[in-house]
Length: 389
Image (cartoon, rainbow, N blue to C red; front, side):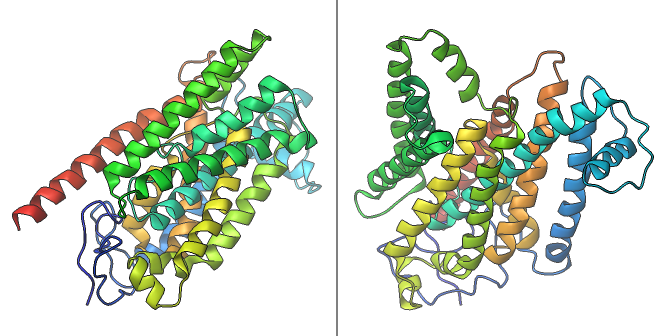
């Protein structure tokens, strides 16, 4: 028997009550489950095949990302260059030095940053939706990305780098954690988090943090700060180099590793706070630890690629259509889906208006905005149906 649902308190279709209501007996997260997009959970063949298919798609995406651009490099030549650089001389080097430089030094860091950022944002969005039990939660909409941006801008404008090369990421982490705590505390006022309250709190906090960021830029002595920060806040993968990839990659590995270990606890939260507590989970302490972890991952990703929105909103919902609601499957599958999506978004950003490059954050917003509106409309329709019932 599954507990009955409350509109806006949990990922739609999980059938759970919000905090402060009778949770009923805890459900089994790995069983048949109605996902947030309305489809039946796939615990069978589709769920098992999805990670395999997405892994293959990711290889295709990386190949396209390395080969597509102003200088086209065929797939066979792409992997010849890559394997040759790794020390495997299975193919006779027949490519020019210029093409090798383009693939290894220009496109490879960019594509790998796209993989890391897309996977990281998808994983953070998945975890946030479980932690606050809200299908609309994701770093960009909740103001977490704005907090990370403000922290990074403080370092850029002041020039203070007490921690050396990791100063930007550390400041972004602090800003992300602060904004996440502000949004959660504001939305929790009154004892119960709803979709509307959470989004409004995120919008309000993001507006204040953005205003502070604009004020810092207007009062800065260096005129080039505004141009530099504006290009960065639109989100993009350009300008990355090998030396700056290790930090976001390490943050991603840490995040996926910890969240995978804590997948059972995330599943318990789907049954409600009281039901999770009866199963032995210290909800307050668990949330606090997870908020710190997610802020760290978000801060490192924003410092590397800028605030890229809606990846963490779309990927978890799409993935749940195929693998169900068990976070042991959702987390790795969402990471693969997010990586594929952002790599292709970057390919489009480089080629749609060539030779001009569109910020990848603009393209993700063009995809994610309609998706967000559809989720809002669907939740409102479900609320009306439940009210009539």
